[in-house]
Image 1 (cartoon, one colour):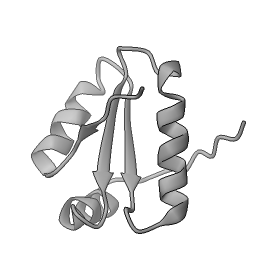
Image 2 (cartoon, helix red, strand yellow):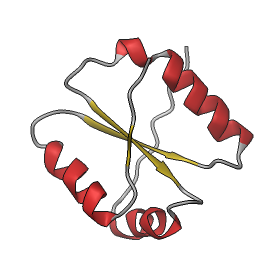
Image 3 (spheres, one colour):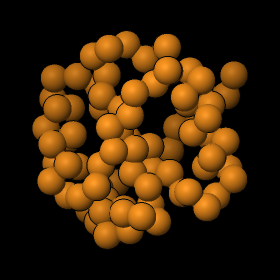
Image 4 (cartoon, one colour):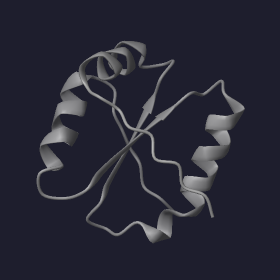
Length: 85
C-alpha cells in the first residue's frame, strides 16, 4: 500500500521541494469533499506498489490545509498530467 506523508504547512512543503533535488517527489492535492478526488486517491493507493521506495509521495488536503493549498497555487505553476489505464 502507498505510504503518504501529509503536508500541513509551508515548512513541510519546502522540505518536500528540497528532497526533489535527489529523488522524485509527488504531491497529491486531495479534496475530502469531492467524490472524483476520493476516487483518484483510491486509485493511487491501489497503484502504490508501482511506486519505488525512493519516491516521496505527499498528500495535501485542500480543505483542511486551505492556506497551504492556496499558497501552493499562487506561488508555483502546476501542470496536470492525466494518466489512464
